[in-house]
Amino acid sequence: MTDRPYSRSEYNRALIANALLDPFAVVLLAVMLVAGFLLGAIAILAPAGLVLYGAAAARAYLDEDVAQGVLERERGKRRATLERGGPRVNPASLAPAIGGLLAGALQREGRIRDAVERAELPYTEVLDEVDRFVRALEGTAARAQLLYEALAESPPAQVEARLAEVQGAGDPGRSELAGALTGQVTVLRRMERQLQAFYDQMEKILVELDTVRGNLVSVSASTDAASSQQLAADVRGLREEVGALAEGMSEAYEQPGR
Image: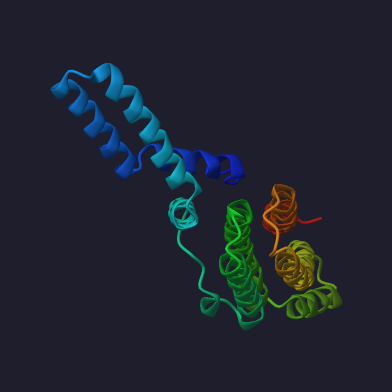
């Protein structure tokens, strides 16, 4: 299965497939065909069986309880696929500032999911995007943790103080050490900026997740496809922001000091 969102058309196809394989409809058709063969009236009972089969399948397709069951089943399949992508990140395993932001995002994810499920909205596409967004966010938080740990091990201020001490000694023999410390300060300050960007962007994202939930609640009386697609696009935009943020933090390690 690809990583693209689960669309309403796919959901509709799942409903059709479920209706065509409805046990009652299949058994009814089989009984009519067997009776036709046994009674020598296949020309009459086969068409009648197909009509009854179609009616039973249509009943299954239109049944709200059956549709909800199909929706839950497909959601479960999609979530299982996403969860196979790798281990989840526990906010408690991260630094308090980072873990708190991730926990806030997970809390909002739960609220969005609850809003969709309580309103019985067929917004599987939105939930898929939320799942992918949270996965991307967890990966970004893990990168932020690496920055946090590196900065905690080598605080930029301490390295700058050591650089000033070496430069102040005026010893030509320590010029290479001074150069190495200068490069380290450059990298550490860049990492510091990237970590601060994570904090700032995360605060913005939490606000926007609240907005997504508010929009879900406001359209809870509608199952319009355009509403679902717009909300999914909103979450997709957040995921792209998180991806760009993660790339920036990776560059803090990969780029040479300058």
